Image 1 (cartoon, rainbow, N blue to C red):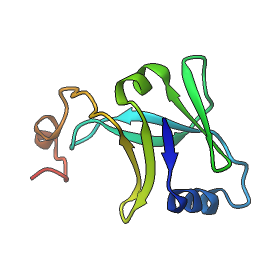
Image 2: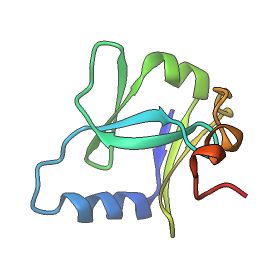
Image 3: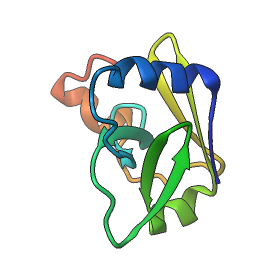
Image 4: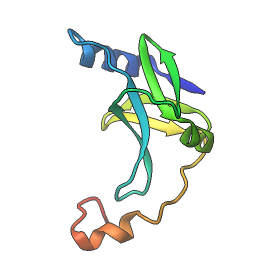
Length: 107
């Protein structure tokens, strides 16, 4: 249900070097391109599933996990890539709703 590439693990190791390894939350964020999965430092709660991988703890809300299936963590030139197995549900956001407010990522 969760996988992480060696490259992603190395990036996390570098980030946490000399620091305590806090739990990492996988959550749904919205933006110009529509909903996407993202990462944040956060403690797991009662409604979360926790994965231990590569010496790190990852938490994700159980309901979100049921929507996305599995999650794959990798690194791209743009930063971390958190890919769901199943497409994220559309939330009515996306480029059309933010361009009028000056979203720089819209075409």
